[in-house]
Length: 92
Image (cartoon, rainbow, N blue to C red; front, side):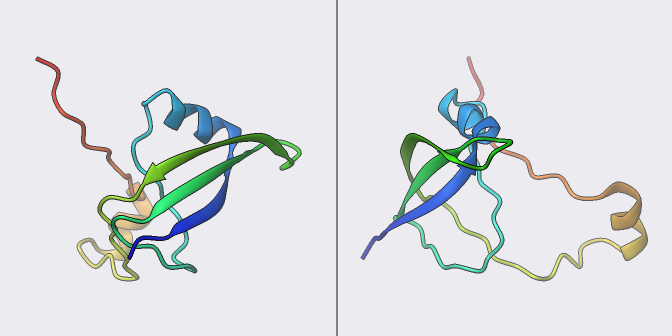
């Protein structure tokens, strides 16, 4: 059974999702969501962290939780860090 989950989001990320540029969300896994749930993203001002009154609803697709990124050595991670890549359909 899907649930509705409210989460705050900074304006700069809200705008990127709203425009379609940002199609993923990275969050600390200190709460649970599953595929099919609905995130209600409530915009907060980047500086004041106060609610702007705007919100949007997004259905949760794929969820991956991990504590283990053992694909790379600690030295590689320290040197390069991680990147999260959004996958979109190629325009034809």
